[in-house]
Image: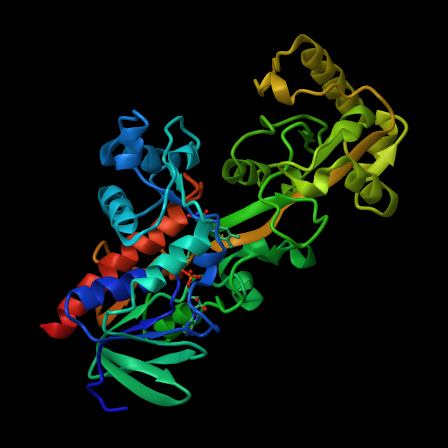
Length: 456
Ligand SMILES: Cc1cc2nc3c(=O)[nH]c(=O)nc-3n(C[C@H](O)[C@H](O)[C@H](O)COP(=O)(O)OP(=O)(O)OC[C@H]3O[C@@H](n4cnc5c(N)ncnc54)[C@H](O)[C@@H]3O)c2cc1C
């Protein structure tokens, strides 16, 4: 391959890489899109396809008044400003235009899929009809007719750096050169070695933890940019979902009718709270864990929705062979699961009284989710934040997606977008859809800027 074959090389064909490829070619660049996997899509294609945005045409259709300003204020506040405001501002300014861009390309976001995906009250979660697979397919489909070479089964191994500038990537030991490189290789969820270094909250769960994203997302981009001098940001960030570890599959939700108690035997949250917040609050409890407790009547009524492993028959199985613990009295149960017995009895009495009255006087959970804890046998199962959904530690970029080095200078020729970057993801996952948003929005910015640089 000659030195001048491409203007822009993009590493990774998930949401960020595909969006970048479209923008870069629309700006006139010849693009090579390298994908390690058998096909494009990455974790984006596996995702729920929720996109977090404010001020969209769909919101207006639903009669919702919303704008970038209030979205920014919410995101910064809920993350206590422990994020890069410039990135957040850029996200918020571009979330609605990028939504319209995806719709223009053909992604279908039905009105009934607009919902509250954050911890506020505004419907900003836009779920694509065909989930993440649809977003990835539409973006990939948009490549046809554009000057993009998509090379699957092709893994970038390192960056070519010449004269202080990133001029290409190595594939199979050979350099491929371009005017600019965009790293869009996703997170490092599939790399346990990196968990130990960058995501200790996941690493400390040991064998209980598992990852549900794309296999190829091993943090390659992050490592290759780091070797070239890039700075990482956002230590120990990501999304861990709470789980009893019944099965190693995608269990985004625990049923809202269970009661979570900590080692002190006390409740600590409304159990129906948004999953992103539940995990964060759980991690501050003793030993970073809790126990989901319920009685026989609640077990017998349990349905497969929203958590299939929590259906009545499955729970009976788990009580036989573990990990659910069954006991004839609450005191026995407490002793066996390692919770203060007297406090658990008090918690159950108060909760049962509230359930009968239809009013949760402690945490104000919706009355539809209240079930007394009074009919033996009683059940308890340990819950930990242990499903790695996405990782949030990554390359430091600025609002133009230029990768910053350890002296906080833009690294010439190098851009990055999506889960491979840090600084946008905060301690709280402020809105379901903000990761697909992070990928597509900043992928577009990276594509346009890389093309501009390469063609200048
Ligand atoms: C089950 C699940 C559900 C989710 N649901 C949602 C949701 O509804 N909304 C939301 O906002 N977020 C969701 N997320 C998170 C979100 O999907 C991701 O954070 C986001 O899509 C990442 O996009 P990306 O383009 O940065 O990375 P990816 O889409 O993962 O793409 C990265 C690509 O880079 C490739 N790659 C990696 N290394 C190399 C290399 N060395 N050379 C070449 N290619 C390489 C990978 O194979 C992959 O195709 C979910 C995640 C999971 C796992």
